[in-house]
Image (cartoon, rainbow, N blue to C red; front, side, top):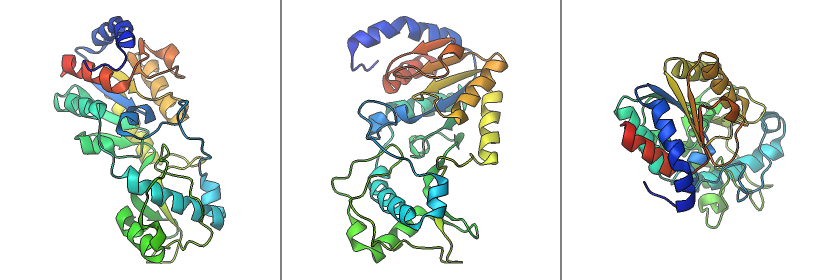
Length: 281
């Protein structure tokens, strides 16, 4: 097992053994959060090193043109870097467990697409993704690359993202945005929005149901890299707990689901998932 802090790994060894007792012989559903992608260079939301940020709300995005312009500039600058990140050992370990038919499905709160790039197939992106863009007026969907090309064509200064400080969702705080031209829908001229779930916006019903099916059809739930501070994830933990499925949580720091966990491992996700996968796959 790869370790960064030998003392922490040593302390976690009995908990790893207990987690393997709980998970061995059971099919597993997985729920992941921002803490899984930190080893890929994407900051999480709540650690001490995370950049301070004021998340864009759906209401502000729709109702305030200046805030929408600021969001598109910051989102584009971050997306240039965000889209070039690579899966880490934790992502690859979960893909290997799916290949071994141990993991039956994966629900992620992340919008980075790294699970898919690592090879996982049964993935529900609970909070959407940065790959697509949708018109809020007519529903036309286009690839993010198409909108990015139009944005850079109209605003050549946005073609480079040197020195930006990446945020957890691929956003950055731009220095200026007042005079930037933001593209509209080519079909109807409506407002374009990336396919991510903003604060104040409900998770689409189809995605919520798909996530519930993954949890309901597995015999155990493994949570990796989520503090479960967002209700969409915590509800899945409660759902598994109500039907008696054992829950293993791997996360640095406390989570809102700790009291429901059969095993809680306070450690990094990459090395812990690698250890679990080497024994279970």
